[in-house]
Length: 252
Image 1 (cartoon, one colour):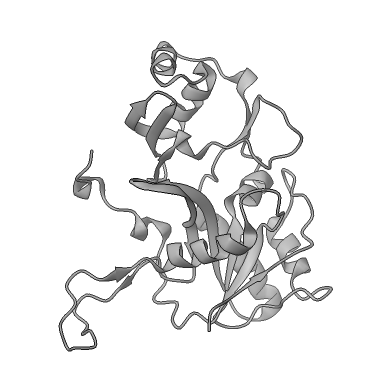
Image 2: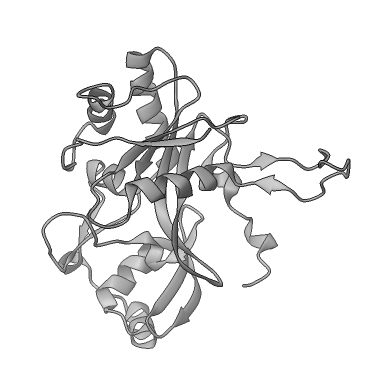
């Protein structure tokens, strides 16, 4: 049976902190859970980006003319739009108060994932970017934990995304190590013996969404959790394996 076990007691993460070591120190201490073979450690993007010092101050950003024009269209500050463009490959959709781009990592998302929530004392000019390489970040955490627990656990970096045609946000995986992003069941049979033609399970996103219910999005202060009881982790993949290629995007 699936369990989502919160990891509490983590300190406020600061730039330069050794996040893998901090996570390792919290596991098994003071009643905190320990890692077991088959577990997935889910860590929020926010604390990974904080440790990697992905902070940007908008006062250091000079908007280009393109950013100024786009800012007028989407009713957003020009320096923010400039930062979004720097983090993106191209603009996917734009409207008043909405700017959707394809991030350099391949994710299609609002404002290139740039965030101002839960990053310390309120400061309107300080923002946080996504990690440069979330898969590598997940791998570094897994390698460090392996030194202490004796096996290399699966690790996931999660972030909250909106979805086209559906209200609200849900957590998805933007970085993974030691597990599948997608379980491909095409060619297998259903209960009635029919061959499944298109079934691919978004395993990493499903686990991230479940963990998000425990970790929360606001003031809960739970930036890490363990998922236990997943039937199979599949063959290791990268987060790129869950991204739909641009040439398959029928809604551009």
